[in-house]
Image (cartoon, rainbow, N blue to C red; front, side, top):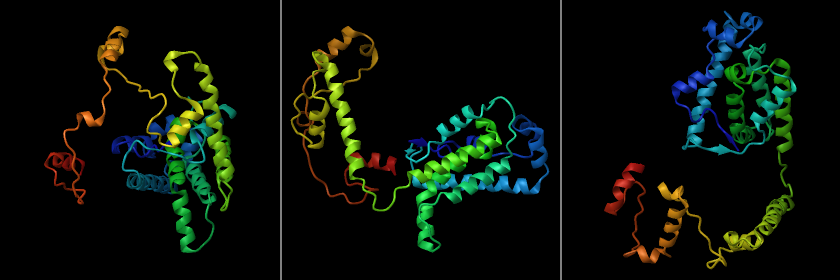
Length: 295
């Protein structure tokens, strides 16, 4: 699972972390070598490409906030970009303290070319194009945000050779991860369930003779969970204490002695079923304030 770097930050932090300002020569000298600065300074074409990248990042951010209303979200994608970047830094002996010789124009154009190569649904008709866009939208957004020109110069510090290796590695891993239509996934699913279940069984034997761990574990516990057993053999409860009881063993024992078996029946005065179809309003007065806060 990976974080989407453009989803969470506010406008000021977003601009500071992702927008490359070609007019700030003092900052450019800290990031790039003299040859790169000569190529991009006073170049209308370079300014246009960098501005297009910034507009695309803003559009990506709006799209993400429509897809994921909550900012703290992690997604599963076929390429772990941060690991690939660290591997590139180690293989090519990248110096993180020196200015880079990789032009931001090459970075932007390289990421664009890579996005065109990540094809899942081929075809030129409108339906195929829409399906292709939907299938790769999150991957492309992650690519553009993680490999943006400012991050490459400020944080990753990759040279041109390392950047080319990184793009090739991402393309190879992405193509390997594509599942063909009609793929027989039954054996993979069985193995994915069987391996953790076997590991659970092995871990069970480590607790033999320990009274504190005298609970049902391994495959028997897995069966209870899958079958939604109403009466588990050895029910257990993990309680996280607060305050002084969390640090003092004697006070924790006092809390343990005062714990009572309590069910919902004991704390419920009465129950009722209401027909309340409107999600933005409620006929229950006690819940109206909570509904107003939520909407």
